[in-house]
Amino acid sequence: MVDAGTVYLVASGALLLVALGVGARVLLAIFREGRERSRKRREGEIDRFTEDPVYDRDPPDPDADGSRPSTCPHCGAENASGFTFCRECAGPLGPNG
Image 1: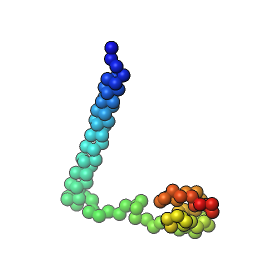
Image 2: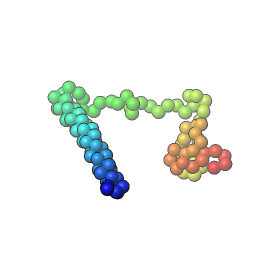
Image 3: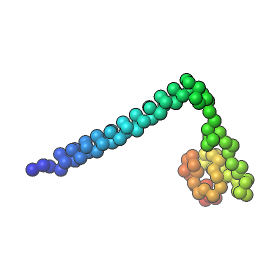
Image 4: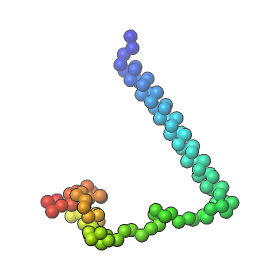
């Protein structure tokens, strides 16, 4: 009869092999995309430094919706209005904090 420890080891080993296979495919795709981008840069198809529309934009104006950011009383981090806890230290932002 097979004990529970053996079944656990076989099942977890099989799951690890599946995860390794999926991870290897993803890493291979990332590597191939990087090689393709490098080739395009060398051949002049794309610029070496391109602007990224997501990261190269200005931050939103905090007064645009009539609200102001709140400062954490624990660590001093700026947080958007309407939040209950700090994004840096997770401390409460309310008056009881």
